[in-house]
Amino acid sequence: MPNFKKERTYVMVKPDGVKKGLIGEILHRFEQRDLKIVALEMFHATKEQIDNHYPKDEAWIRRLGQKTLGTYEKYGLDAVKELGTNDDLELGKFVRGWLVEYMTSAPLVRMVVEGVHAVDMVRKICGATLPYLADMGTIRGDYSNDSPVIANMEKRSVMNIMHASETPVEAQHEIEHWFGGREEVIFDYKRYGEE
Image (cartoon, rainbow, N blue to C red; front, side, top):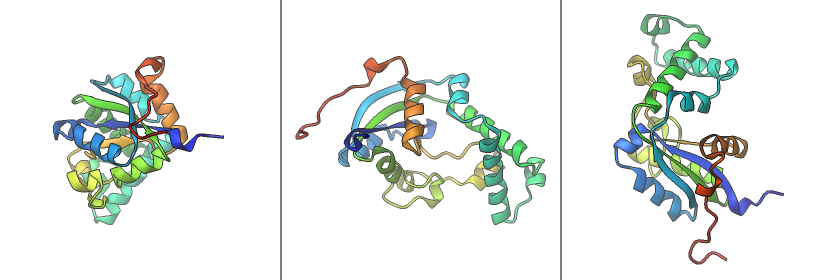
């Protein structure tokens, strides 16, 4: 049975979070909720690393394209006129490419966060993936106001400060991808007052 007190998740501060000087604030938000930072490192990712971070399967790429089409429909915009196509696979490939470019444009901070239901707790602290929908009091709600409509029109990725694993399985995969073979940089320690 899993130890829910020691669940681990993967978090990455994205280029806009680094450039806005939010690394300390992000760490503070996690630690004030009794989560532990057990691995932390600033680095500059290669295109290959980011390409391998994001799924490459057609269903995931189509989902990106479908989200883009949904956004265009919601705001009465014409995807063909703005982006040259309304094919969900082609649009998904555009968005995935913009993600890779964005994530390699500046240093990132990768970390492993541990604690009670860490995956869900971290996502709650981060707020909704789309910053304009994130509640005030969350990191994205307090420090970002980007929109997929604007990002698509500017042919770039949505700037949403950080990435956080969605599920324990995804967290395990991402921790292995970003820290695999370097277990010595993931620490096991007790916080003050922890039994």
